[in-house]
Amino acid sequence: MIDRPNHVWCADITFVPVRNGFLYLVAIMDWATRKVLSWRLSNTMHADFCVEALNEAIARYGPPEIMNTDQGSQFTGSAWITPLTEAGVRISMDGRGRYLDNIFIERLWRSLKQEAIYLEEIDDGFKARRVIKDWMAFYNTRRPHSALDRQTPDEAYWAGLEEQKAA
Image (cartoon, rainbow, N blue to C red; front, side):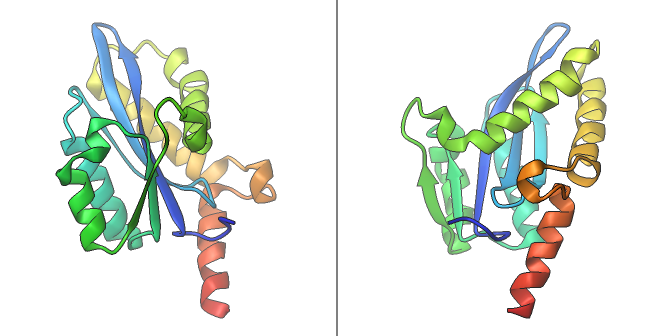
């Protein structure tokens, strides 16, 4: 059972439509609290932006016990695997075509797109970054979740860490 911060993290990539094409968005999320730990936007599908988000999350929050992703090339290459292995993180990958294995981050994408991205005319990466940054801050700090007893992801994350320390 996953019921504490930093037990399992997940990562995924989604497309963000802009006027002349798409950008790619990766997020690192804590499963137990739904907190988005870091994210990056890119105009390519190279692994670099994913690794940057991973390195930021580990630097800010310490490594998780387990990292779950799909089997995309960004998550199966050595640039992604090496920092996880060096940090002692166990790696879990969804089966091919099993997007529901990572349902929490899929739900994040749906909410982000319906509540922010699709409501804006996004011309370029600068506007996309601003819209995503504002929404992610709202999501983490002001959007309560029924699965978290009406706490925000930030509240659930930090309260969970305090419970772990007290135990």
